[in-house]
Length: 328
Image 1 (tube, rainbow, N blue to C red):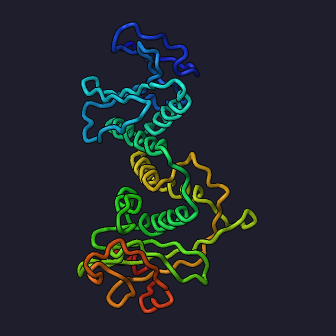
Image 2: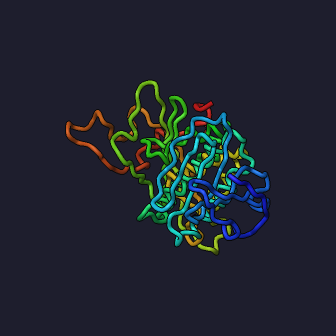
């Protein structure tokens, strides 16, 4: 491949079409987008379709298979240690450019041995974002994600290194518990209003425990707010605040991947849905706690959803420090 380094602001316009079958003319992504001079290139082949090339280190292994896109071909060319993205539908050029710029931004400051992994992580994010029928999170979904992010920042990240804190956040993966570290588990619940003492439980397995496990409920009060409330915040505000915890590009990419799994994408506008925070309560789920568990369900009864009135759980309320001590 012929490599030309230039600072053109037009990614593909100045690139000539390649004459050889399978060959691509390329130009290194300019410093305004690529300040760390990573080996990333705008490319164009014989088909004249816009393309993007990422070169990675020969020692890099373990990255997953790339996702599939309807109008973008992705080739992991291991013999040349490169990933080639090529647009098949010219009408999607604007979206393709955004995807390429996002990858270019994400790989800045990433170690050379992580270029392939970082690229695939961003592609997974975009595959989820472009999924047919996807839309912004509902108000209830926003509330739930805010609760998990607050726990991640205030408890998990205050105890563990960022990568370990993230590994224990399993809520976006549709796990039955939101957080798990060893034998300590935490289910985060968000509720509206101090007068509302009810929380929803999604299955008969969610509050199951065995003798070696400890399970806590972390209940955050979140109420609708307006612009007039100086303490009001949006989901995006919380996301931006939490991601400041992650200095490592890989940790940040992992965090963004978790957000994508939870249905959050920065391209969605959440600025008009504002929240205010009330009191946070913590409970330990143990013998006697009012709950439905698998062993109490008759044969054939599954997927049980129910509500718990926390007004009947005062004997199990604990200080937040109880979670902190259990996790240390």
